[in-house]
Structure formats: C-alpha cells, structure tokens
Image 1 (cartoon, rainbow over the protein chains, first blue to last red):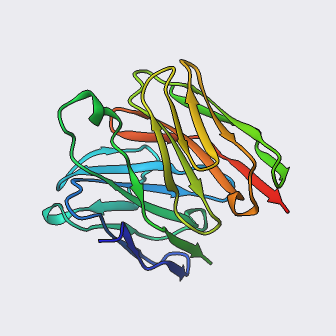
Image 2 (cartoon, one colour; image 1 turned 135 degrees about the horizontal axis):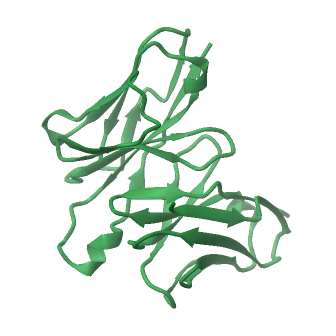
Length: 120
Length: 108
C-alpha cells in the first residue's frame, strides 16, 4: 500500500451539478478526514470518521455536502448543486488507531494527493 | 479559539543561505504540532511531529523545534529542491488546524 488514494484527481463541472469524490485510506487506518484547500490558504477541516462513524463536522460543511464511510473502509464526499465557491482542492487524509498511550495523542495524519474541483 | 499563524508568507533564499520559518500557535490542549511540505498541485507531505516544549527533530537539511507558543523550522544550506510551501498545524482533539503556510523559493 503506497498511501492515501483519491479519485478523480481533477473534476470540472457546471454550476448546479452534483459531484462525488472517493478516498481510499492507508490500509488499517481507522481514522479518515476530509479537508478543503483554496489557493494561498492552508487546508480547512471538513469532517472526520473513526471507522464508519462520522464523529465531527465543521460548520463549513453546508447541507449540500455529505460524506460517508460505509463499512469503515473507503469514503465518499458528495457535493450537491455545486456553486462556484466550491472550487477548491479536496484533500483526504487518514491516520492509524491510537495505541492508548501518550504517544498516540499526536498520531501522524497522512494526506492524499487531493481532488481538484473547478465549478464553471 | 485555536489558531496558527505562520511567517513569513513568502521567503526567497539563495542556495546555501540558511534561514528559519516561524509558526505561532494558540491551542487548548496541544496534542502535537505538525510540519508538512506541500508542492504545487499536490497534497501535504508529512515532515515532523513535535509533542512537547524543548523537543527537536531533524531530517536532512530541516530541523524543527518547539516552545510553548511557537515552533521553528530551520533550513540549513537549502537547495533548489527544497522549494515548496511549508505548512504548520496543531492538533487538538482529533483534527489538525493549519496555518496558511510559508512559500519558500530557493534559487541556485
């Protein structure tokens, strides 16, 4: 396994259309994250899963955005009725389960190469 | 509110000219400070995690240090291939909060 895999890498869509991105995390990583990044900014947290449970959602995640992680493996991020403001790079990341010690407080989070969305 | 501020926004160095990048943070309950490197059009690549004040980590020409309020990424004798955006992030609970990054350009 070489890392977090995201598909598609690039997507151009017309305003109002729905788009879906897929993320395959590193094998045996039980935590999966979605972030959004625009030019000149750092990644912004969107949502987070531990196994199949969605544990936290940012207020940035409007009701047009939905994320799922069936069976605790891959995840999808769907954006409905896209708007030009949704144009960004959508990053997926994963991290391994905690070890129950102080060390796991800072478990490394590994990112994929991102999926670029352009809404025209 | 948890916050990360990075400076400078951009840095131009001559090859071999050492310098430091700064990351100031405020966070309730630090669970790790992370440095990532990001090349244009790609996802962030993990460099270091620091857990407590006084800790230092090194990798090739990079050295990261941590105090209670800030972290530094020292670049010694940089090469053109070190050109990238360097992102700092802090972890509270289970997510990372990023700064806006420092865009480093190293010229031969």
